[in-house]
Image (tube, rainbow, N blue to C red; front, top):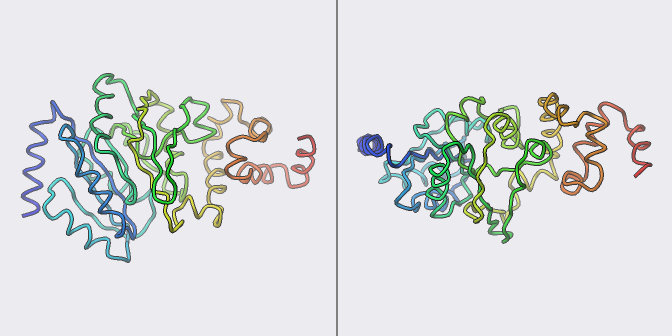
Length: 298
């Protein structure tokens, strides 16, 4: 019965594609039984002008995520659930992407939400300018914190200093496929590294000045961002990204000494990560004594 409903859904989609393009939403889920229904409801409530398919990927959950999702999507042919062994966000998003049928692509984590008009307003940007590659919005933090976050304005240089995009930004499926999807070597900042590769070629950005993406700052403080201070995974990710994209960093003057000269004076990295990632990189190439000598001139 579920398969029949899905077939009918895609028959409808193929007939409507010329007017309403299909948006594929990939939702990775690991032990998300407490939040994922709220996430899926935010998708189901999208305005009638949006045509979406939702691909939920259970990443080896050990709680009741699977049964919770199955019950919710039983009467929703546009939503499908797949399961795999636990591999983390990058691999899980890539896995879900293989089932994508839409022209446009959105990643939404299983504890976050999108505004009822997220899809329709984002598609309006693509419709008004087909050359657009990425549509991003302001971000509403909720649960533990409540404030609006405005991502930094993108430029080819700024993206090397700080991630200019939240993962829940609308892109074209073909572009994501072409750049090679997510790098599964990364446990953290896999989205930032993907955006670096994406914007080397696909860098025409539209920003909607409304908080259409709702990012949950958990009361439990057990997200990867929260755990970064304990596990120091961000520093290792920065080192990996810098080494992987050394040519690109160098082309903007971010080769070793210049990188530290440019980043050491109360910049974003120092304020957010206390200088950990570039200090460790400095240690690797110049040693700890050299760092102490370097800092004498601050």
